[in-house]
Image (spheres, rainbow, N blue to C red):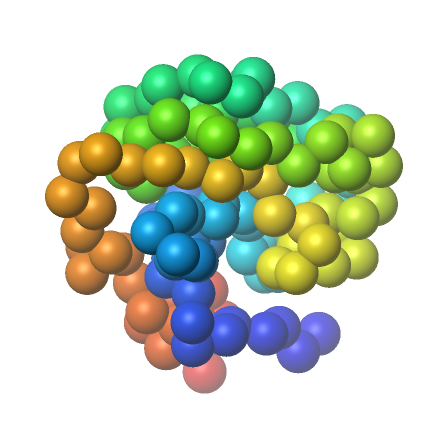
Length: 129
């Protein structure tokens, strides 16, 4: 499979991506990681208004193969949860980047996106040459 690694995303070691939009941060899971999970059957996410520290889990993604926790790459408050993905996990599987985002975070801390991998760094980590 040919995965997309858009240049406008930053990636965590745990396969979450971050997209900055108007001072807010959209969080999701990379195409590569979603493909590795296989058929997704259930998504559970924290509630809007939850404040999380860096590295805390913000939900679980359950597939026919495994149950994986997803982690926040920096501290922040959940200001939006993608209810569509909870109601229809296929959205996450079919389009994890555009429609399959998971959370939108507002971060008061100095978010260091530079600590995350760019698309080339992430691609070289997950896709063998």
